Length: 155
Image (cartoon, rainbow, N blue to C red):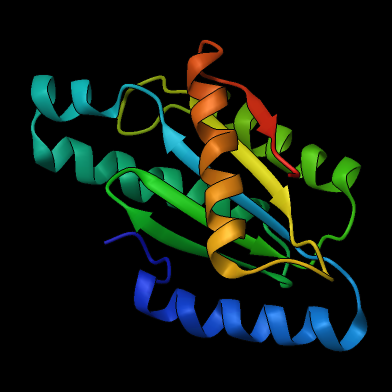
């Protein structure tokens, strides 16, 4: 539907990213994005419009990512990005760039926003479950802070 990888492929992509991070002793970045109030689109305009919004959203994200990043449909209206970005300022800049582009780009005739949680792989002590919990907590913070923002969770 979206042209993004699915959760099954995420396992392979994440395993490769972790192996690279351990070998090079460098972190990598993760973004978890959620389309704000997406349920209203499906409820008010139908699932065909919802699918068109998902396709547009995914296209916007993929256009902003470099070759060193992968976009995964995490589920529903949530998307995850694995990127080789190693610093928090660069990761935050990418997340803000995505957030602003989504806000400015009509999708299937609708103005939308998104909430984004970000984190970095902690080279020495991290696990995939800790990584997913951190990025999910960051997304939850973004939604609780009024949506349409980027929040960071490093611990």
